[in-house]
Image (cartoon, rainbow, N blue to C red; front, top):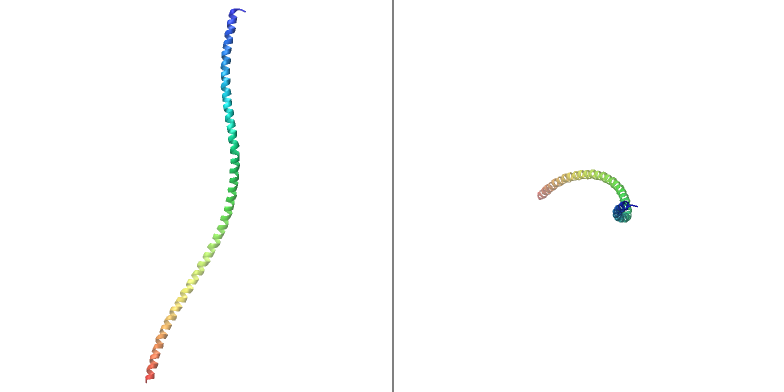
Length: 138
């Protein structure tokens, strides 16, 4: 082989070595990135693993809240019915109260009339007693 070919071959080998060094550096960078991504993936797996029980707990709580809401809706329905009955009872009580008030006013009117009659009778009685006393004197 000629010296020129050897120099060319050495030159090509040097270029190849430089390219190999660059490839090696790039592979090291890729390996670092891969390791970093692997660590990130492990962290994500850990986070997901920790999140799953919390999600299950929240799901159970949501189901419990739904059941509680259903119970509350039923209670509200019962309360609405009770309020309806109370309204009817209040109406009846108001009606009865009006009748009692009317009866009381009638009784008060009768009592006033009887009081007037008693006063008149009392005046007559006193007048009759005076007349009797005067007749006895004669």
